[in-house]
Image (cartoon, rainbow, N blue to C red; front, top):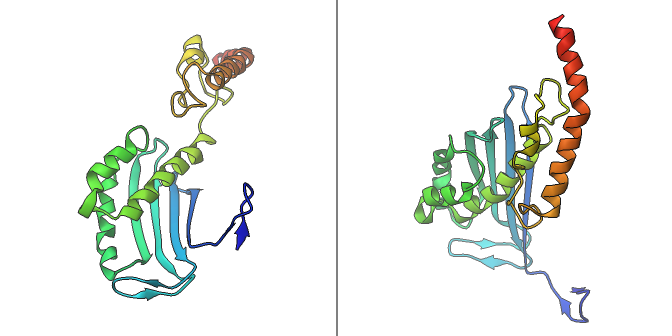
Length: 205
């Protein structure tokens, strides 16, 4: 039993879903994004084919997505370690149909069009949502910035639309966050321009 912070009412846990996603950099230049999902209940669950004891997983599923630096899916594996029935594992290989797809705008819409209803597993498909955002977050820290050696600096680069623009409310185009990010990028490029020009002159000599 626990007490909520907003009232004196008590409550008890009935169901817990835990989702964890981790991004890995591989030695071959690719990236593995591994997501897992686990459902448990606080009391025994009487299912159609079996009874799952309290605390044991109703669902224990894992997806490993291998992507390149452009967020293109090179390989994908779905694993079902626990499920309500033995038939659930039969659909795992269907997720190979996502190979070649790019993670970005419209990704989940395309996933659902390929794996909707009997063509996929509801829970595995849901897991691809946080996996996709984890993939983007994983690569963001590795992407080039204007201060990286070899990156060209010009006015057009500073004024191009920020890749995060309109991805959510905080990053809405024209909002304070986008304006600040654009201004900071322009300032970084202005500071780096003399250094890069000097480097190019030395190379020409």
